Image (cartoon, rainbow, N blue to C red):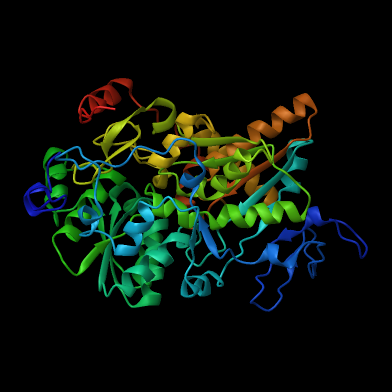
Length: 502
């Protein structure tokens, strides 16, 4: 396939309770892994006590396998296509970018993938992550609903991203790779990969979307503290970046542009591979540790969710929580409403077209069938930088098309209003991205107040907002405005999507 190499140099730029009996609902349900010393659980009244759950102890260990939803879908998702031939991508087409094991996982139809012991050993730094009942938020909203959130902000990087950054770095190190490159929006993925690379002796170079690079300097400092080199994107370091800057010298950038820059560097250097923090199948597989743990935690307290709500940009956090529950739904064991929440300014699921499109702006990646706003669509610089992506993960798009989930879009002012309510009741300051899930959760909880139904709502709290405080400052000062997409802008972008049959 030499004449059609996906990443050859000349193809890069083709387009509380008192007493001794404490109610389990009031506990911080951060279960102890079997191979760690027992830890204590935080309680809602600030006391500490050992867990006393009548549950099989095997149910609270760190998962030993990642889950692949593809194995259980009645209709398999469409394959990625080579951008030159429009034929399904072969493993060798991806080898310039990814190590062999990740390529294998990307195309796998196996139901479970074993987690390497070395990866589980790193996971022990923060996993299992806690499942917390938001009793104070329930009280604030005066709702009969029971609200739970799975909190991934306990990781070293403060988000869910290390769940895939660690295995990606490990697989690259095992193959003898010396350096990895990547893109990042808000900086959560970039900081997670920088952390993971520091553990396995890899160099790390990151292209951060310019809008977030300027808004979130402390994310950049986190990456640099862990040894990464960070550039604003678009940059003059790549042909892809130079082309964008030529058209718009003040471009705020986008995840699609930053992906183009990182892919270009990886494709041109044999000792360098590319890592992606969302969208691709293997990334979604790795994130299912979230949902697998949560299933056991919910089971241990005798709860079954009626609603599962998560934010979506590329989709990894949402998939990580929801996919194991979709498996149980397909088995007929439960029937929750599974709801994705995206920003109104970048609504790929609710306003995009389901078609083949590039994963990046410059058109260097394989064509993936997904909900897209067009690969060169540049969203307005909302504060949820991790959600500013033109497309949705192909596997999530496929699941959406099959009808196993639904999607809504919410503007950022409503999201930050919900975040303030959450912070002032639960104490945790959410990152801008999960504020979308919080806003949707509050909507549903208020609906329960109206109907009197005691629904169980499970939401994904994928990271803290300690480095996103300028966004809160803007909201508190009344400077935050809703940025909506422009229909004409999207129509123009969609007109440039490649024409592919099927």
